[in-house]
Length: 325
Image 1 (tube, rainbow, N blue to C red):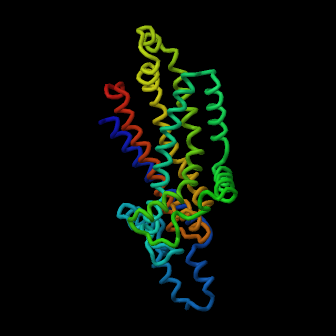
Image 2 (image 1 turned 120 degrees about the horizontal axis):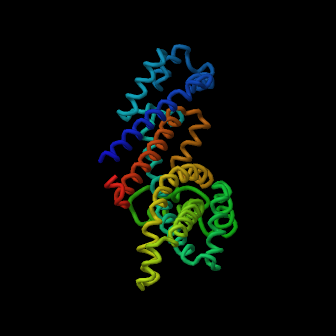
Image 3 (image 1 turned 30 degrees about the horizontal axis):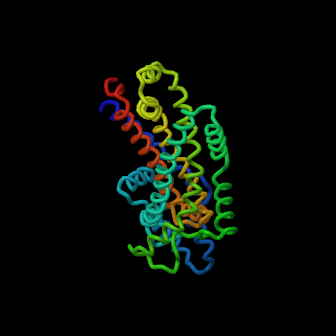
């Protein structure tokens, strides 16, 4: 518990530091979105409405420290203001709707990539030097080297435009009403195949390389030699002696993968016009919708910190040495 409490305090401090940076960055930029909105309206808005707009979106005049304390209070109460692009919707409503799509896409892609990449890494390390190892290793390194935007465009061009097997965009058929029905769920699954393939391609190489290297480092350990000398089957030694210990660093890479897939999902969602957090952030940047940008960055920060904390908890459960440390 002492270890977990120390990590929890550390992550809380990191979140407050990230929130502080998130507060000061837009305010260091010249102008504000309210001025842009007021200027674009021309003579349609009277001058006295400028202050009303500032009050509506939280851009009030006052000491910076007072604005900062108000901002921190709004974070912990869940009041992130109102979106400028999607006015009068609150930021929590805009991001909450997009979060469902991103979590469904990101979560499924992460689970599939982790399971498949770990399995391929185990087999490649166990058959080190074989043709299978060479193909898997080269393919994994190539997959991690290609940027997510290139992978998205290649997958979309081949399977969307050239072959026409899958839709080229959207999360579901626009002609269908959103409902909990087999037709709508099937449409969502069908439209999500290409973004899923893209994200899995981006992630799977990293898991494969990490697991392979960890396995190779452990195969020469004394307890592996002893297990083989005892006459245990190769499958038993591979899974319960080597893979069980090699998977610990791979679990740590899950937290890094969350950040990678959030960045990759931004590009992927824009390419496929998928209504997730990445696409919302892109549209908010174009519209200078600072409340949505700040809320999105807070979600990304909180996701990374929570993922790292879950990894710390899983380490305590998987590694008995930490319990006695």
